[in-house]
Image (cartoon, rainbow, N blue to C red; front, side):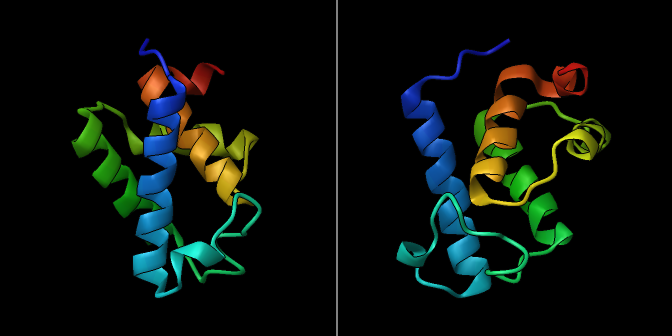
Length: 100
């Protein structure tokens, strides 16, 4: 298990916010932790998969999409805070996220 520091959490948040701002063509300053990525930004599941690929490359993570999908059945992503939280858990626990 990797340790998640405030610096890593902020880096993950910046990666996610920058990605959504670019892909959804919105000003990054408009995105908050309470923003709904689907309803307010027009995000979709394909964008989420691409974001996972970016994070796995950046942090050298070994994670199966099925593991994330199983976790998300218990914890849907309704806000950007939820998205950041799931990515922090992926960073920390990898495929063991399904056991949380």
